[in-house]
Length: 128
Image 1: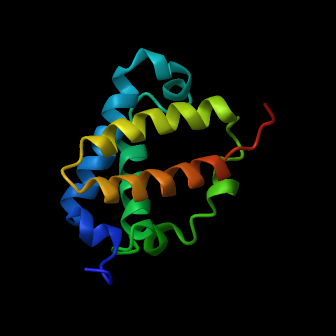
Image 2: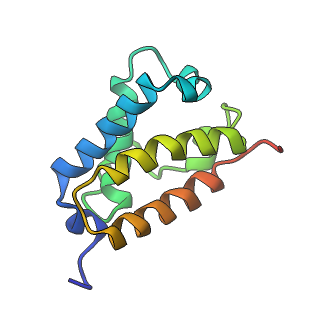
Image 3: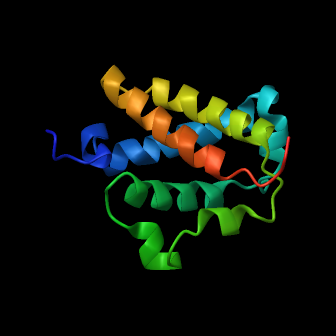
């Protein structure tokens, strides 16, 4: 079990897709993250697919995003958007709720949330 990736520990493709869809469902319906939602296109289908593909590889599963788009270069790809602490926190609010709804062990949820926070914090490109 120690050699298993987070992707495997979570349950694979179906669970990663569920997490991605749940994240965007929360973002799309929670008025407290309206600023974050407004940064996205009206139709979230493309965003959902790109995040699913990214998370697949990021979590240790198939490198779908890399195969289709090359290296994620997350900071560069997010530069056109003003990502400050508020945006990070709104993104984390949605992801935290989605992760907490996963049917996985609490220690795995904690590891996922720590990794998501570190990545979200790295995306900041605006001073507070």
